[in-house]
Length: 447
Image 1 (tube, helix red, strand yellow):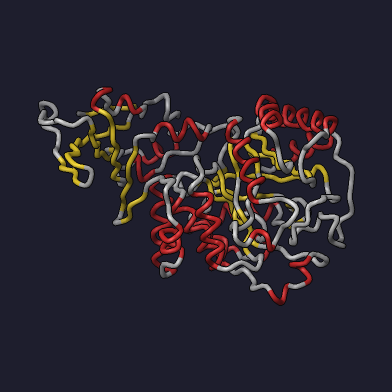
Image 2 (cartoon, rainbow, N blue to C red):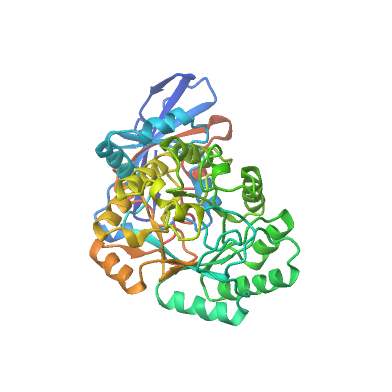
């Protein structure tokens, strides 16, 4: 059986699963399928036919909505390329993730880079800008944060920015190449801040009308607030878990881990993409880094994006004042965390976030090779310094990267389009499902 999509042809090899642990492969004959099927499960093995047109790899895009994107591959069981297997799973154990995390560095990097290229076009990197719309005065006691009222830092509380100020900043971000504009407010939760929330909804609508994707990080949300943000056009909501459940009480005492997970659930249930990650350098052990990834990788849906931050210590915060007691985070720590995230959440964007100023271009390239495919650009991340736009533009040119357009899905993996990825899908015979039923069509891969 041959399914043709534009210039893209997929050759299907079907197999029959006779018992749960045994798959007997049977190749299609030229006249049709082997008919000795007695069970109601089929396994499709296929690869793409290689194209003669190198430009074809820059034409096909997946849907921008993460749920639509994942639905295309809903019956996908496994991918393999160059001796590396990968699949989207939600049943990872800590032990399995720990084994990946502790692989020899050269082997971990090889596996992560291969997985990255099985699922993504490695030349495309999302660019996001983060603006603090309400700085300082936060009642949380996060031991790393310069904006907490519990710490004496250089940050002084300021009022919420006016709507027009935010829209002007969004236009500058768009002109500088950003395609996602993120707005952060330093407070514990939206709560009953009705006037402020009304202005934020206006900001979301305004930024969305510019053709930018819109993200917010506003602390805890209830279900109704999440739905209002969705209705206003919010693309994504950031709510980091920071670290493992075990280490978390040593970092924050004013908000529980469960409260964070509930906000994530509220956001997910409203149909907003979840952005959720953590920070390295909070005094955690390797087991805590594994623990954070385990929580993320076993959520009902993997986050659309996972930001990995390196702590930028600030004088006046507990972690900033006790910096000698905290092991510094180096490029190998970041690359190991990014690589493990890439392997256990292969369809998730992994964002190289705070701390980039402390890493050279070569070190940042190591992190991109580990599977990072998103960054924050602009010279500020809330109150933290970040590489300027010109520096990032030069880095992109040096590394041969391009920015991901706003409101367009990611490019399809060139390895997949060029027949280098072996894909296995499991489908039900009862529905007479074939490749066409699995939605690999021009409607899904948009040029």
